[in-house]
Every structure is written in structure tokens, then in C-alpha cells.
Image (cartoon, rainbow, N blue to C red; front, side, top):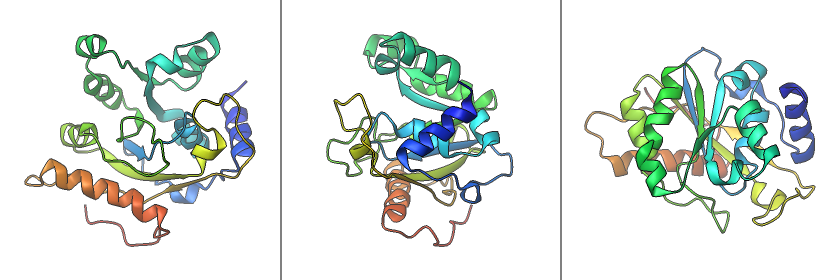
Length: 211
């Protein structure tokens, strides 16, 4: 199946709309960062992007899940071009996740990341791990785009293999200002998290942050 046809099928099953007006098109490298409640999360963001952005983006995903069978492995490696991150500490030390993500950015790819680090058990947005801050400070030219995913934890509940026919939604926010030179890590992560919460509360139309 071709990528465009699969993206259409994903949008059909999940009810997510393709709205290219929400996605900046200036050609800059991007990190799309989102809440995480389902294995469908990166798939839905990927499907919601316009064709040109979809060809450029690489999701960051758990290696153990996406390499657990031939179909998942093919989807992750061949179709989505995912940056697969192992959970095993020894494997992470051998190939640090930040280095792998940095290599993808330097090669010209965009990324989809989930700063919570793991799926939320309740659907509520958890605290952010420091990876997003380190990526932003190591790659200051990258545009940070908050994304809010709605209802996906109900479309594919934890432990289920088949999606439930419910309507989901994906909202792309205005770019987040990069960390200031004197901005503490915790303050930046709180600010990045607040941008997703603002989308969840329906404030997409608020003014973008100053760069």
C-alpha cells in the first residue's frame, strides 16, 4: 500500500481531518511534540500532515513494540522510517536516543516525539522528560510544534489490537519559542507542556509566542 492511500485510510478510520492550513510550510526543520495515550498517536499525526511534510517526517517510537512482528517492523522501518528507540538501558547506552534523533534532524528530517516518554494510563497529560529540552538546545534552528491528540486513547485502548470506531482529532499549535539562554530546563518544559494544554482547552487561536 502506498503512503498516501494508507494516510487516507487512517484518517477514515479515526475521523481525523487533513487540515494543511494548520501546518507551517516554510521548509524549516520541525519537531512535532504531542501528548501520548495510544500506539496510534504517531500514526495519526503522520496521516494528518500534508504529503510534502509526511515525506519528510520520522516518528520516534519504542523499538520493542514496533519490532515485535514482521508487519509492525515493515511499517516502522520501511513505511514510516521511524527512529526506533530501545527501552533496554544497555542498548540505550550503546546508542543514546538523543544522538539518534539528532542525526535524523541533521540529515534534514522532521521528528514526531512524545515528551512524556510513555503512554498516559488516564489520558491526562503527564510531566515532560528532559529530552525535548536537550533536542531544542542542541538544535536551536529547529521549529517546535505542539500537537494535541484527542480521543485516541479510546479509539485504541491499551491492550487492544483493533481500533474502536470513534472520532479522533489532531490539532497543530503555533510554534513554541526556543529555550532562552537563561531559561531553566524545568521552566521550558512547563512552557512546552502548557502549549499542549492550551490546545486541549480550545485556545488554538491564541497569538503565537515571540521567537
